[in-house]
Image (cartoon, rainbow, N blue to C red; front, side, top):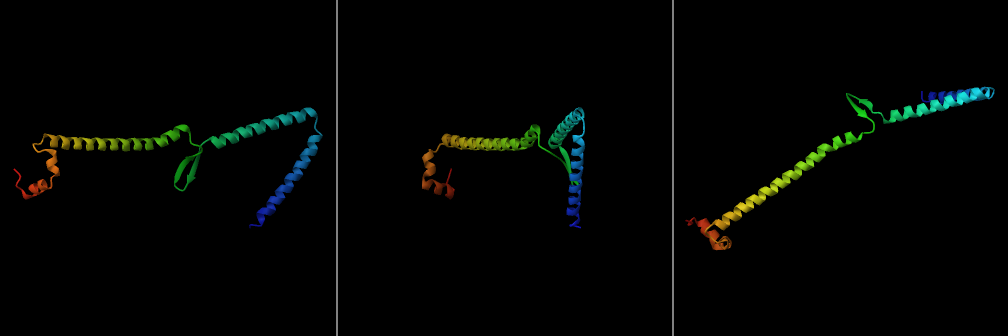
Length: 141
């Protein structure tokens, strides 16, 4: 079966060459006004074919694979922005969480500092090794 395709392509190529040669001989026998109209029509057909090919390349196509179908083609600017929106929201949420965590740490440190400053003991007493032994023994008032 594999040898059949090259033979068919060769036959199609020979047919195309013979047809082209016949059309070229016949076109040389045509009057000038007809050849100009044919040239103009050929140029219009090629131009419309190029525009159709361009539209086919840029238009989204439905791609169907298995049980899923998706739009294919080049993504538009709005699609790219909409796709990046979840990432932007995620990063903003993470920045907000970090900022909130830092503010909580500052508030806790300020509360500890104010408790130390308002206490009757001087802050140097907390660094004394005998003070920690005093607290462990339970002799604290």
